[in-house]
Length: 401
Image (cartoon, one colour):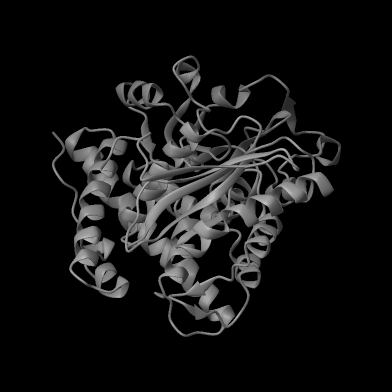
Protein backbone atom coordinates (compact mmCIF):
# COMPACT_ATOMS: atom_id res chain seq x y z
CA UNK A 1 0.00 0.00 0.00
CA UNK A 2 1.02 3.60 -0.50
CA UNK A 3 1.78 5.71 2.52
CA UNK A 4 -1.20 7.78 3.74
CA UNK A 5 -1.12 11.27 2.29
CA UNK A 6 -0.20 10.07 -1.21
CA UNK A 7 -3.65 9.55 -2.73
CA UNK A 8 -4.33 8.35 -6.26
CA UNK A 9 -6.38 11.51 -6.84
CA UNK A 10 -7.03 14.68 -4.86
CA UNK A 11 -9.29 17.38 -6.29
CA UNK A 12 -10.13 20.75 -4.73
CA UNK A 13 -13.67 22.02 -5.37
CA UNK A 14 -14.50 25.70 -4.86
CA UNK A 15 -17.44 27.96 -5.62
CA UNK A 16 -17.25 31.72 -5.03
CA UNK A 17 -21.00 32.29 -4.99
CA UNK A 18 -21.66 29.92 -2.09
CA UNK A 19 -18.28 30.17 -0.36
CA UNK A 20 -17.74 26.47 -0.95
CA UNK A 21 -14.34 24.92 -0.37
CA UNK A 22 -14.18 21.16 -0.56
CA UNK A 23 -12.24 18.17 -1.78
CA UNK A 24 -12.66 14.71 -3.19
CA UNK A 25 -9.74 12.45 -2.32
CA UNK A 26 -9.35 8.98 -3.81
CA UNK A 27 -6.87 6.71 -2.08
CA UNK A 28 -7.25 3.72 -4.40
CA UNK A 29 -9.14 2.68 -7.51
CA UNK A 30 -10.15 -0.92 -8.14
CA UNK A 31 -11.84 -1.58 -11.43
CA UNK A 32 -11.94 2.19 -11.90
CA UNK A 33 -14.17 2.67 -8.85
CA UNK A 34 -13.96 3.95 -5.28
CA UNK A 35 -16.38 4.86 -2.49
CA UNK A 36 -16.35 7.01 0.63
CA UNK A 37 -18.42 9.38 2.73
CA UNK A 38 -18.58 13.17 2.68
CA UNK A 39 -17.51 15.02 5.82
CA UNK A 40 -18.73 18.58 6.54
CA UNK A 41 -16.81 20.23 9.38
CA UNK A 42 -15.09 23.62 9.75
CA UNK A 43 -11.57 22.22 9.96
CA UNK A 44 -11.65 19.40 7.42
CA UNK A 45 -8.81 19.50 4.89
CA UNK A 46 -7.27 17.38 2.17
CA UNK A 47 -4.67 15.86 4.51
CA UNK A 48 -7.36 14.59 6.89
CA UNK A 49 -9.36 13.26 3.96
CA UNK A 50 -6.34 11.40 2.58
CA UNK A 51 -6.00 9.54 5.89
CA UNK A 52 -9.72 8.77 5.96
CA UNK A 53 -9.65 7.59 2.34
CA UNK A 54 -6.82 5.22 3.24
CA UNK A 55 -8.93 3.92 6.12
CA UNK A 56 -11.76 3.26 3.65
CA UNK A 57 -9.42 1.32 1.37
CA UNK A 58 -8.45 -0.90 4.30
CA UNK A 59 -12.06 -1.44 5.44
CA UNK A 60 -13.15 -2.57 2.01
CA UNK A 61 -10.13 -4.79 1.46
CA UNK A 62 -10.69 -6.52 4.81
CA UNK A 63 -14.33 -7.04 3.89
CA UNK A 64 -13.12 -8.73 0.70
CA UNK A 65 -14.82 -6.22 -1.61
CA UNK A 66 -13.15 -5.18 -4.90
CA UNK A 67 -13.66 -1.42 -4.81
CA UNK A 68 -11.30 1.38 -3.80
CA UNK A 69 -11.43 3.85 -0.94
CA UNK A 70 -12.22 7.56 -1.14
CA UNK A 71 -13.39 10.44 1.02
CA UNK A 72 -14.97 13.82 0.33
CA UNK A 73 -15.07 16.90 2.52
CA UNK A 74 -16.58 20.37 2.76
CA UNK A 75 -14.97 22.94 5.06
CA UNK A 76 -18.04 24.62 6.55
CA UNK A 77 -19.74 25.42 9.84
CA UNK A 78 -22.96 26.74 8.31
CA UNK A 79 -26.10 25.81 10.25
CA UNK A 80 -28.87 23.96 8.50
CA UNK A 81 -30.69 26.29 6.18
CA UNK A 82 -30.68 27.75 2.69
CA UNK A 83 -27.01 28.81 2.63
CA UNK A 84 -25.83 25.36 3.70
CA UNK A 85 -28.07 23.64 1.15
CA UNK A 86 -26.65 25.85 -1.59
CA UNK A 87 -23.14 24.75 -0.64
CA UNK A 88 -24.12 21.09 -0.71
CA UNK A 89 -25.80 21.51 -4.09
CA UNK A 90 -22.77 23.35 -5.49
CA UNK A 91 -20.53 20.55 -4.24
CA UNK A 92 -22.68 17.93 -5.95
CA UNK A 93 -22.83 19.86 -9.20
CA UNK A 94 -19.07 20.42 -9.34
CA UNK A 95 -18.20 16.89 -8.23
CA UNK A 96 -20.56 15.38 -10.84
CA UNK A 97 -17.80 14.33 -13.32
CA UNK A 98 -16.11 12.30 -10.56
CA UNK A 99 -19.38 10.81 -9.31
CA UNK A 100 -20.40 9.73 -12.80
CA UNK A 101 -16.87 8.49 -13.39
CA UNK A 102 -17.05 5.87 -10.65
CA UNK A 103 -16.38 7.77 -7.40
CA UNK A 104 -19.36 7.25 -5.07
CA UNK A 105 -19.64 9.80 -2.26
CA UNK A 106 -22.03 9.20 0.62
CA UNK A 107 -22.64 10.31 4.21
CA UNK A 108 -20.17 10.98 6.99
CA UNK A 109 -19.69 13.35 9.93
CA UNK A 110 -21.87 16.43 9.43
CA UNK A 111 -23.58 15.03 6.32
CA UNK A 112 -26.79 13.08 6.86
CA UNK A 113 -28.84 11.01 4.47
CA UNK A 114 -30.92 14.00 3.32
CA UNK A 115 -27.72 15.94 2.62
CA UNK A 116 -26.38 13.02 0.60
CA UNK A 117 -29.57 12.97 -1.47
CA UNK A 118 -29.20 16.68 -2.13
CA UNK A 119 -25.62 16.16 -3.34
CA UNK A 120 -26.67 13.27 -5.58
CA UNK A 121 -29.59 15.21 -7.07
CA UNK A 122 -27.35 18.17 -7.85
CA UNK A 123 -24.90 15.80 -9.54
CA UNK A 124 -27.70 14.17 -11.53
CA UNK A 125 -26.66 10.83 -10.06
CA UNK A 126 -28.76 7.75 -9.35
CA UNK A 127 -27.27 4.83 -7.44
CA UNK A 128 -27.20 1.66 -9.53
CA UNK A 129 -25.84 -1.85 -9.06
CA UNK A 130 -23.25 -2.43 -11.79
CA UNK A 131 -25.16 -0.02 -14.01
CA UNK A 132 -28.57 -1.58 -13.34
CA UNK A 133 -31.34 0.40 -11.55
CA UNK A 134 -32.15 -0.60 -7.98
CA UNK A 135 -35.73 -1.86 -7.40
CA UNK A 136 -36.09 0.70 -4.58
CA UNK A 137 -34.60 4.07 -3.77
CA UNK A 138 -31.25 4.49 -2.02
CA UNK A 139 -33.08 6.47 0.66
CA UNK A 140 -35.54 3.63 1.29
CA UNK A 141 -32.64 1.24 1.81
CA UNK A 142 -30.75 3.49 4.22
CA UNK A 143 -33.84 4.42 6.20
CA UNK A 144 -33.78 0.75 7.20
CA UNK A 145 -30.02 0.30 7.37
CA UNK A 146 -29.05 3.30 9.50
CA UNK A 147 -28.01 1.04 12.40
CA UNK A 148 -25.86 -1.26 10.28
CA UNK A 149 -22.52 0.31 11.27
CA UNK A 150 -23.49 0.18 14.94
CA UNK A 151 -24.52 -3.44 14.38
CA UNK A 152 -21.03 -4.23 13.14
CA UNK A 153 -19.45 -2.48 16.12
CA UNK A 154 -21.61 -4.61 18.42
CA UNK A 155 -20.40 -7.77 16.71
CA UNK A 156 -16.77 -6.75 17.06
CA UNK A 157 -17.27 -5.76 20.71
CA UNK A 158 -18.86 -9.08 21.54
CA UNK A 159 -16.07 -11.02 19.81
CA UNK A 160 -13.33 -9.25 21.74
CA UNK A 161 -15.22 -9.68 25.03
CA UNK A 162 -15.57 -13.41 24.37
CA UNK A 163 -11.95 -13.95 23.32
CA UNK A 164 -10.65 -11.98 26.30
CA UNK A 165 -12.99 -14.12 28.44
CA UNK A 166 -14.44 -11.11 30.22
CA UNK A 167 -16.69 -12.31 33.06
CA UNK A 168 -20.28 -11.02 33.22
CA UNK A 169 -19.39 -8.32 35.76
CA UNK A 170 -16.81 -6.92 33.31
CA UNK A 171 -19.21 -6.74 30.38
CA UNK A 172 -19.78 -3.09 31.13
CA UNK A 173 -19.66 -0.52 28.36
CA UNK A 174 -18.86 3.18 28.06
CA UNK A 175 -19.79 4.78 24.73
CA UNK A 176 -18.14 8.00 23.61
CA UNK A 177 -20.42 9.61 21.05
CA UNK A 178 -24.19 9.12 20.80
CA UNK A 179 -24.89 9.69 17.12
CA UNK A 180 -26.21 6.96 14.83
CA UNK A 181 -23.35 4.58 15.61
CA UNK A 182 -23.30 5.16 19.37
CA UNK A 183 -27.07 4.77 19.67
CA UNK A 184 -26.97 1.60 17.59
CA UNK A 185 -24.26 0.20 19.84
CA UNK A 186 -26.26 1.02 22.98
CA UNK A 187 -29.38 -0.66 21.58
CA UNK A 188 -27.55 -3.73 20.36
CA UNK A 189 -25.27 -4.44 23.31
CA UNK A 190 -27.93 -3.79 25.94
CA UNK A 191 -30.20 -6.26 24.14
CA UNK A 192 -27.40 -8.83 24.44
CA UNK A 193 -27.09 -8.32 28.18
CA UNK A 194 -24.19 -5.88 28.33
CA UNK A 195 -24.52 -3.08 30.86
CA UNK A 196 -24.16 0.44 29.44
CA UNK A 197 -22.72 2.46 32.33
CA UNK A 198 -21.66 5.68 30.60
CA UNK A 199 -22.43 7.71 27.49
CA UNK A 200 -20.66 10.88 26.38
CA UNK A 201 -22.05 13.54 24.06
CA UNK A 202 -21.04 17.11 23.23
CA UNK A 203 -22.21 18.34 26.67
CA UNK A 204 -20.30 15.84 28.78
CA UNK A 205 -20.96 12.42 30.27
CA UNK A 206 -24.02 10.73 31.76
CA UNK A 207 -23.31 7.64 33.81
CA UNK A 208 -24.41 5.13 36.40
CA UNK A 209 -22.29 2.25 37.65
CA UNK A 210 -25.51 0.27 38.08
CA UNK A 211 -26.31 0.68 34.38
CA UNK A 212 -28.15 3.33 32.37
CA UNK A 213 -31.77 2.88 31.22
CA UNK A 214 -31.04 2.68 27.51
CA UNK A 215 -34.58 3.22 26.23
CA UNK A 216 -35.02 6.34 28.39
CA UNK A 217 -31.63 7.56 27.22
CA UNK A 218 -32.55 7.08 23.57
CA UNK A 219 -35.88 8.83 24.07
CA UNK A 220 -34.05 11.86 25.53
CA UNK A 221 -31.57 12.10 22.64
CA UNK A 222 -32.02 14.28 19.54
CA UNK A 223 -30.96 13.39 15.99
CA UNK A 224 -27.58 15.10 16.49
CA UNK A 225 -26.78 12.80 19.42
CA UNK A 226 -27.26 15.32 22.24
CA UNK A 227 -28.95 14.03 25.39
CA UNK A 228 -31.51 16.25 27.15
CA UNK A 229 -30.46 15.92 30.80
CA UNK A 230 -33.79 17.28 32.02
CA UNK A 231 -35.56 14.23 30.60
CA UNK A 232 -33.40 11.70 32.45
CA UNK A 233 -34.24 10.03 35.77
CA UNK A 234 -32.87 11.92 38.79
CA UNK A 235 -30.58 9.10 39.87
CA UNK A 236 -28.46 9.27 36.69
CA UNK A 237 -25.20 11.14 37.32
CA UNK A 238 -23.91 13.77 34.92
CA UNK A 239 -20.64 15.58 34.41
CA UNK A 240 -19.60 18.43 32.13
CA UNK A 241 -15.92 17.71 32.70
CA UNK A 242 -14.21 17.23 29.32
CA UNK A 243 -13.30 13.61 28.66
CA UNK A 244 -14.68 12.42 32.00
CA UNK A 245 -15.79 9.26 30.13
CA UNK A 246 -12.13 8.23 29.86
CA UNK A 247 -11.88 7.61 33.58
CA UNK A 248 -14.98 5.46 34.01
CA UNK A 249 -13.93 1.94 34.92
CA UNK A 250 -15.42 -0.49 32.42
CA UNK A 251 -14.68 -3.64 30.52
CA UNK A 252 -15.29 -2.13 27.09
CA UNK A 253 -14.84 1.42 25.81
CA UNK A 254 -16.50 2.11 22.46
CA UNK A 255 -15.24 5.23 20.65
CA UNK A 256 -18.04 6.38 18.34
CA UNK A 257 -17.46 10.11 17.89
CA UNK A 258 -14.46 11.90 16.42
CA UNK A 259 -10.93 11.21 15.29
CA UNK A 260 -8.03 11.46 17.74
CA UNK A 261 -10.32 11.22 20.77
CA UNK A 262 -7.67 9.19 22.59
CA UNK A 263 -4.15 10.52 22.17
CA UNK A 264 -0.80 10.62 23.92
CA UNK A 265 -1.93 13.33 26.36
CA UNK A 266 -5.02 11.52 27.69
CA UNK A 267 -4.37 7.84 26.99
CA UNK A 268 -3.27 7.14 30.56
CA UNK A 269 -6.81 7.96 31.72
CA UNK A 270 -8.32 5.06 29.78
CA UNK A 271 -9.80 2.69 32.39
CA UNK A 272 -11.05 -0.16 30.18
CA UNK A 273 -9.92 -3.69 29.42
CA UNK A 274 -10.51 -3.23 25.69
CA UNK A 275 -11.17 -0.32 23.33
CA UNK A 276 -13.31 -0.67 20.20
CA UNK A 277 -12.90 1.94 17.48
CA UNK A 278 -16.45 2.61 16.35
CA UNK A 279 -15.43 5.89 14.65
CA UNK A 280 -12.77 6.65 12.05
CA UNK A 281 -9.26 6.94 13.52
CA UNK A 282 -10.40 7.72 17.10
CA UNK A 283 -7.06 6.67 18.60
CA UNK A 284 -3.75 8.22 17.62
CA UNK A 285 -0.91 5.90 16.68
CA UNK A 286 0.90 6.81 19.89
CA UNK A 287 -2.20 6.03 21.97
CA UNK A 288 -2.61 2.63 20.32
CA UNK A 289 0.98 1.70 21.19
CA UNK A 290 0.59 3.02 24.74
CA UNK A 291 -2.58 1.01 25.28
CA UNK A 292 -0.92 -2.11 23.88
CA UNK A 293 1.97 -1.73 26.32
CA UNK A 294 -0.59 -1.60 29.15
CA UNK A 295 -2.29 -4.77 27.93
CA UNK A 296 -5.39 -2.97 26.65
CA UNK A 297 -6.61 -4.54 23.41
CA UNK A 298 -7.72 -2.06 20.71
CA UNK A 299 -10.04 -3.27 17.94
CA UNK A 300 -9.34 -1.14 14.83
CA UNK A 301 -11.87 0.98 13.00
CA UNK A 302 -11.08 -0.84 9.75
CA UNK A 303 -12.60 -3.96 11.34
CA UNK A 304 -15.33 -2.69 13.67
CA UNK A 305 -16.54 0.42 11.82
CA UNK A 306 -17.04 -1.19 8.40
CA UNK A 307 -20.78 -1.92 8.29
CA UNK A 308 -21.94 1.06 6.25
CA UNK A 309 -19.05 0.81 3.79
CA UNK A 310 -19.70 -2.90 3.35
CA UNK A 311 -23.39 -2.47 2.55
CA UNK A 312 -22.74 0.37 0.09
CA UNK A 313 -20.05 -1.64 -1.70
CA UNK A 314 -22.18 -4.79 -1.88
CA UNK A 315 -24.92 -2.86 -3.68
CA UNK A 316 -22.67 -0.82 -5.96
CA UNK A 317 -20.83 -3.98 -7.04
CA UNK A 318 -24.03 -5.92 -7.65
CA UNK A 319 -23.19 -8.53 -5.00
CA UNK A 320 -26.59 -8.61 -3.28
CA UNK A 321 -29.20 -11.35 -3.82
CA UNK A 322 -32.52 -10.70 -5.61
CA UNK A 323 -34.74 -10.24 -2.55
CA UNK A 324 -37.57 -7.92 -1.60
CA UNK A 325 -36.45 -4.87 0.38
CA UNK A 326 -37.33 -6.21 3.84
CA UNK A 327 -35.56 -9.52 3.29
CA UNK A 328 -32.64 -7.76 1.67
CA UNK A 329 -32.16 -5.48 4.69
CA UNK A 330 -32.09 -8.55 6.93
CA UNK A 331 -29.51 -10.11 4.61
CA UNK A 332 -27.37 -6.94 4.79
CA UNK A 333 -27.28 -7.01 8.59
CA UNK A 334 -26.43 -10.70 8.57
CA UNK A 335 -23.71 -10.20 5.98
CA UNK A 336 -22.11 -7.36 7.94
CA UNK A 337 -22.23 -9.51 11.08
CA UNK A 338 -20.61 -12.44 9.28
CA UNK A 339 -17.74 -10.41 7.86
CA UNK A 340 -17.08 -8.33 10.97
CA UNK A 341 -17.23 -11.31 13.33
CA UNK A 342 -14.89 -13.33 11.12
CA UNK A 343 -12.30 -10.57 10.89
CA UNK A 344 -12.61 -9.64 14.57
CA UNK A 345 -12.05 -13.22 15.69
CA UNK A 346 -9.13 -13.62 13.29
CA UNK A 347 -7.31 -10.59 14.66
CA UNK A 348 -8.04 -11.13 18.35
CA UNK A 349 -6.68 -14.66 18.01
CA UNK A 350 -3.60 -13.24 16.32
CA UNK A 351 -3.24 -10.66 19.07
CA UNK A 352 -3.42 -13.30 21.80
CA UNK A 353 -1.03 -15.66 19.99
CA UNK A 354 1.49 -13.20 18.54
CA UNK A 355 1.37 -10.40 21.11
CA UNK A 356 1.18 -7.83 18.32
CA UNK A 357 -1.21 -4.85 18.29
CA UNK A 358 -4.42 -5.75 16.48
CA UNK A 359 -3.92 -2.71 14.22
CA UNK A 360 -0.65 -4.17 12.97
CA UNK A 361 -2.24 -7.51 12.16
CA UNK A 362 -5.29 -5.94 10.51
CA UNK A 363 -3.33 -3.58 8.27
CA UNK A 364 -1.06 -6.43 7.16
CA UNK A 365 -4.08 -8.50 6.11
CA UNK A 366 -5.68 -5.47 4.43
CA UNK A 367 -2.53 -5.07 2.32
CA UNK A 368 -2.60 -8.74 1.30
CA UNK A 369 -6.29 -8.73 0.42
CA UNK A 370 -6.04 -5.48 -1.54
CA UNK A 371 -3.34 -6.95 -3.73
CA UNK A 372 -5.37 -10.13 -4.30
CA UNK A 373 -8.38 -8.08 -5.36
CA UNK A 374 -6.37 -5.72 -7.55
CA UNK A 375 -4.65 -8.60 -9.34
CA UNK A 376 -7.93 -10.43 -9.84
CA UNK A 377 -9.57 -7.45 -11.52
CA UNK A 378 -6.50 -6.81 -13.66
CA UNK A 379 -6.70 -10.36 -15.02
CA UNK A 380 -10.28 -9.73 -16.14
CA UNK A 381 -12.23 -11.25 -13.28
CA UNK A 382 -15.64 -9.76 -12.53
CA UNK A 383 -16.29 -8.19 -9.09
CA UNK A 384 -18.26 -11.31 -8.14
CA UNK A 385 -15.35 -13.58 -9.09
CA UNK A 386 -12.81 -11.35 -7.32
CA UNK A 387 -14.88 -11.19 -4.15
CA UNK A 388 -15.24 -14.97 -4.16
CA UNK A 389 -11.46 -15.26 -3.80
CA UNK A 390 -11.65 -13.53 -0.43
CA UNK A 391 -14.41 -15.12 1.56
CA UNK A 392 -13.21 -13.72 4.90
CA UNK A 393 -13.97 -16.89 6.84
CA UNK A 394 -11.25 -18.73 4.90
CA UNK A 395 -8.47 -16.20 5.50
CA UNK A 396 -5.80 -16.67 8.13
CA UNK A 397 -3.72 -14.11 9.96
CA UNK A 398 -0.22 -13.52 8.57
CA UNK A 399 2.93 -13.46 10.62
CA UNK A 400 3.80 -9.81 11.23
CA UNK A 401 7.49 -8.95 11.39
